[in-house]
Image (tube, rainbow, N blue to C red; front, side, top):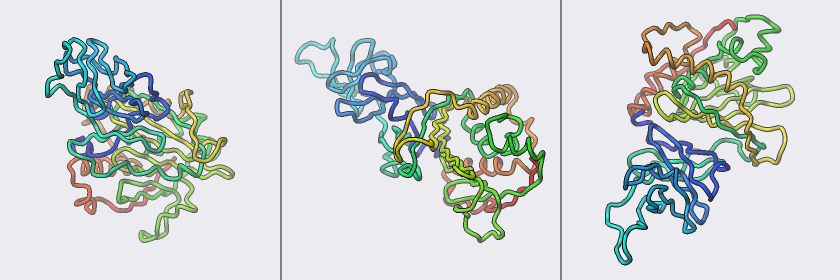
Length: 339
């Protein structure tokens, strides 16, 4: 992921992190321990004691708000410094250099975020999730044994819906009622990623018709996707973060507009999101074949244009060349499909 690590990523939902127990998380191949101190502030450290390498997430949080290793009780503060070694005799200070890496950590928009870059954060906080204060929300997590790249492909792929999302997606029911229909949708490159929407605008210079668009998916680098479907009474709003844990595993942190509750509130949903679970099962089978055979077997058709464009966008961002070279990519295209 190279330069893409210079960004804020979700470590965990805020409601899943209490003051009693630390929580393990993995982001961009980096094991983390996330915990709250005595004041309730979240911290993220490398999940490895500098003594014998035991995971700090197996330890406990002290009354002082430190995290104590479960092996020998070594304690660390939020900056990663070892502040107490129980086996040291009275008056013996903790030696210099006894520490683990600490990652910048903020709490915002119902999530705890970590900065995974090597230096100080480029921005003091992640970009805000739009419209959080306007609606009540439901929130959950789906673990997937596949790459975040496959998840991103899937989100911008409309052609799979009639086959994968039986009984769960509006486009599935439209297909059952009307059969396969040919139509055009629009793909646009944005300042932050790739957007797919329907119906298309008459002209390339027309602004995105947010007030009238029937549906859209907007992938924003590095891993956020806005999904919208206009309904006759209620609209469907979903925000996904496709968090890369390792090359072959990922986390879908999802939050969607609820039909009950107070605006700006969030309720945790322990139920498995059926639509995302349908995607997960398909993509986990795909991941096995990519691991075994690589990607040379791939063949693509015009309907795959959004995914192929997104792959090129991610490649530029990974190389740190997004701002300087995104003009080289296709800026707008109408894609005709049958589905």
